[in-house]
Length: 335
Image (cartoon, rainbow, N blue to C red; front, side, top):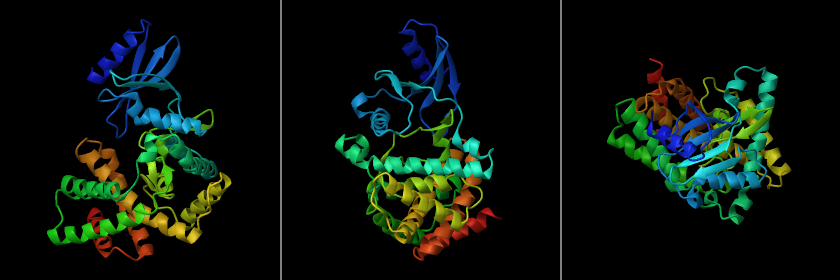
């Protein structure tokens, strides 16, 4: 029994009511999740590695913010700061990613379009986040954060996963291009983002979509969550025409919720720049999770991520070092 499990038992025993516990499997999380059964009802317990202060707890903060904006999130039922536990509404086990693999193309497109509608709604929560002085409104994809993610990719893909660090010359050139990319994207960090808005962080209950894992929300590019939804953990590259259609949909849905219009061509460029950064960040995560935490099921997503990055770079026409390095890695993964 883990220390997380033991803390949860202490929390439940304090209520002096019969209970049963079922451990759930987290993905890339440092938290542990459990389904708790009491009085024929189920709830979800999220157990954190350490105690927390409620006023500083990002999950509690963003859940409150999203709820006030009408976004579909599980209700917080209780929490215990000293034991590091948050108890939330049970919204079931049906993950959107799994559903997308089993339904018709028409149904799949409809679900994705509904998810894109949620991205627009998250962005519409930008001003309320500021007004509420939300923790999320104080966090931003600035140059420092974007660079940290790119460095995480460099370290854990080349050194940890491949065990062949780059040369000093290549590293220096790569650093300059990473800075250029991060500085450009920082100028676009103007709207609230979920930050990890992929299909494994959306759930379905009674045909309704719910957002989960939203504690890292922060300000970023209007393209950030769309890149994550459409390109995270893919094995087959979507067509440029399909991506353009989804970009146009988000732009239209933004206007429908009262956000200012964005030029389609300009947004396509922003989407591609964000694709390079977000997908390289994802490769860093996949590399770390597979090499350090033994979650090797992430490995098949690495090469497709590189291919989508190369396609974006070809459209951008900049960043020659990133292009050369990633093209070389694609060649290596195919050998």
